[in-house]
Length: 463
Image (cartoon, rainbow, N blue to C red):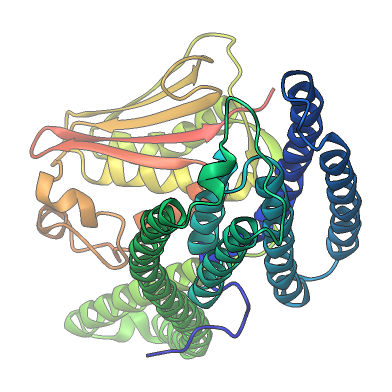
């Protein structure tokens, strides 16, 4: 199992400690303001409240909070690897300093009867959640020891207890049975809470660390897949170029043979040569599509231009008109008169997209069928706002529903297409999908067996 990276904050929960510094500094300003305002207001109702001592304590807290704020600002530009251990130690120092201030405030607001004792529970919970288990144990020991010493010092007279008339009682502050009873229940609450939070946080940290390990393994596997894919594309590209040269040479020799001795050869031999020429042409087409697919998968910068799809489609339908008439297939372009549908992309690649779709629609149509090419702009606020849709619909052999998920896979041809024609490499739609996605669009297909298919290309519209 791979080990975790050696950083101070490895998991998301520990990383959240970075944000706690600013939060603690902000909360401390509120606490200092509460001490000052509370002391000023309380002195009107309780003249025995040590106003001067509380104001001095507030001033001391403000000074060290300013210092912490300055240190945090100096640490902000540092990289995380250097900053995280320092910030973790800084948080621990802040918490301990806050507890010393809180201990003094508790003494001056009633000692064992001060309501501010509950703030220790709050701080202990923060330590258990955001700091290490070791520091939580240290914090628990500090709270128990410090408050015990404070209560003992007030009970024995080493520290003069502060009694606020109507709120606290000097008799209780110096009563050992009361002190022992209070300490038992108060410290038991702290210990149980620390144990419970510690157990929960240990389980959570283990899960986060395991999630991080899984994430690292997934990233490693993803990187291996990317490398394997890049190597596969490189091999496809190299093999395509290696195979293209001998095939071109074979075609040239075959053409030369037919030109020089074609009429002298027996009919059977000429038939064999024709079949060989057909196979060579098919292999050449396959290699060309493999190279085209490899080029698309390798990526690279493409000079995008503004392309008006209406003009592009009209030109394609005119080119395919003769072929469609030979197969007795009607071609029609459906668009709003005068409406421009402009997209951004490489004109040659966009032309290749619609050539593939139009060629397939004509190829797999039956005599007497029709191929309709619809062009429309999807209005803003529609399902696909700000896009252009080109829909190529035929009335041909169709595609079974269970074959649609594999339709854009490389080298995949449906059983119906293989029965309809032996021609085809299974790469055309894979190339088409890559070209559409490279232009920032997507391609969808709807089909019903023996009823025809509709391919919808959605591309971002430009003004």
